[in-house]
Length: 505
Ligand code: AMP
Image (cartoon, rainbow, N blue to C red; front, side, top):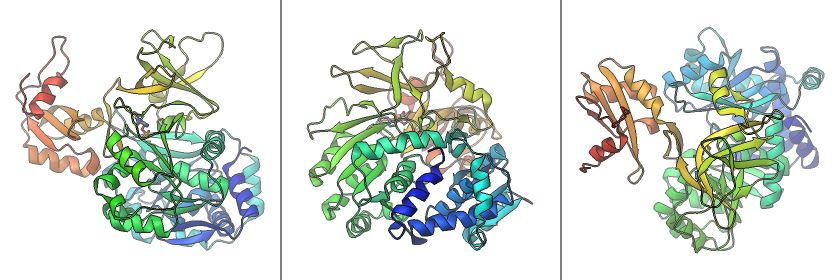
């Protein structure tokens, strides 16, 4: 199998009338989903040659999926764009992509026109009314390979521009069957989708359902601020599988959603994205004693996850849950500062990943790609491409990998991956700001910015809010005469953290 649409065709043939998707914008069977994508694909093929990015600007739902796989039918790859992002950021992304067209819906058409002025802004409703041309689609498919891009997801970039991670058909086809087999996901399951489609956590929901014929129940976004309704939804929809971000599980637990009602059909809870706080994990395990709990680890660049760890008892090590062992077909290892592989227990190194899951790189960013996707430094014998995650890890006495933080200034805040340098660069471009340094107080989950210059902090905040998403906006902005420096001339982040906490060093 080399094209993801083969999975869709296979499931549509095996389970044509089974519910594929339920979403706020409608439900459909597997056969209907396939036919809709053929209509959209036929229409899109008139606007673009294969292997181009097709941004899809709309809320997650049935229509977004039709647009995604329609783009793939046309030989292209899709780029989910959240209408909730600030317009300036969406514009940055569109500039990186330079797409031949953009697919949207009525609600977002004005925004789409502003993002692609004079360009082809296509309405999903119109595309769905096109008569399918199976011969044209077959012709496109013949020219495709498994190495062709399937999707591109944007994440924060330290250069000040978001990075578009490009993932191939092959990477997803390599990962999803081992993912569903390891955790026993099948046609009878109902997958409760939490993650937005521009997050790679959702890739497991979408393709896990497509491969097995499970139903993808897309949870309306607003339910995540209404835990009682969320629990009603999960229980009434008989959701069996939660592949959620840690931040979403913590939110439900902190707001006592589980005390109100337990989603009784849930059999597995698979979480990823950041370190799972033991107290919240114990709370979930207490309410769902029949469910399997698994910690999944990995950055978007390696296609979802590269290691997993099943949690066998609620006696959770205060040092945290291990990242565990590699998925089949993935090579996960630690490199020391000299580029040598570490096998010794307790020695810290950078987590590196090899194998079929590696991204094709960052779209339109060859320097960034060359920096992170590199030849294995200790292999001079043949070409072995690896991804340097920037995460630090150690092996424990049982041989499982454990997370030990980052070697750079990337953080996770409210479930979002953020490069602090991106905030700093955005601030330093504003009038009246000369220099900016941003720090993250992990204990209090707070982002704080310090800057030099003449600008008032309220003005800095106002301007930043126009170009950065809400989750990237620092909680405080403090103007300093100069940023404190360490003896070797770098900004002293420890001192800034102390200032933010009003502590003395
Ligand atoms: P993303 O690309 O948004 O999935 O973010 C990937 C980063 O999130 C990783 O490089 C880690 O820093 C962090 N991360 C992902 N999963 C875990 C986990 N299970 N435990 C700790 N950190 C994680």
